[in-house]
Length: 291
Image 1 (cartoon, rainbow, N blue to C red):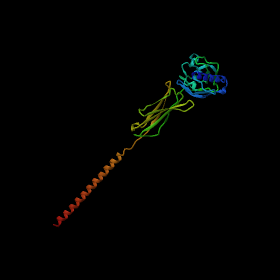
Image 2 (cartoon, rainbow, N blue to C red):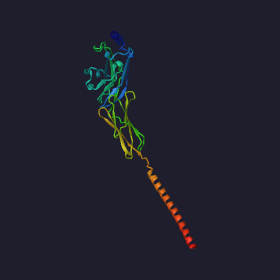
Image 3 (cartoon, rainbow, N blue to C red):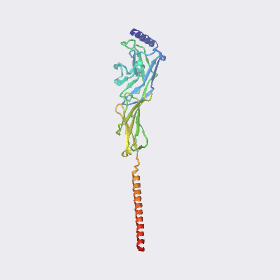
Image 4 (cartoon, helix red, strand yellow):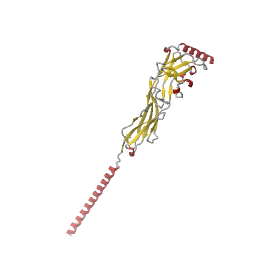
């Protein structure tokens, strides 16, 4: 069984090598451009394919290099072959055997703009050096758009909160480093905070924090701030003013009304009592006159 597997890999590798010089046989999907925050990190999504089929990772070597100089490697499995400026800052996240060539770059510097291209090399045996058969996807390279200021979070909230009722605020920020996502924090204490991470395609990701609070009257005109802290320590806050609608207390209407009704009722009873007493006095007076 093992022998058959080796033979299968050999013939597959042979077919790939024989056609490796033709660009029609190789296809790559790499974003053309992606934002990169200086001082933070970026993940460049990348995938490739070959008409000959998939090979195991042990038969492939992945390299990222500058477009204008194929010997200027920003990533290589041999650290000695990486440019000094990129040593310790690049990492292949994907499995080449699964056609994944995704690249991570950390500690982004202002001149890391590229363009950078992926190159695949073929290996005949697990312990052999790469062969001369290789293909660089120089038509599918990526450029990094350098951003020096961290993006501000976006806040979504109702215009007015109602005293004593749940109030929900959503804070979100777009980034390009899913391996080190931004941290979203609030300046209000709440145990009800839900965090989501979403892939919005083309190398862009969204981190979202949903805050639920029960505002009181004292919170009216209070400033609520959501702060995004990015990998590398850069921070970006966004603030809005909370307006709390007070729930009217009916006691100030009910109590005076009850007091008024009670007073009127007592006054009415008093009047009736006095009227009866007056009538009785009149009768007694008439009787005394007749006698």
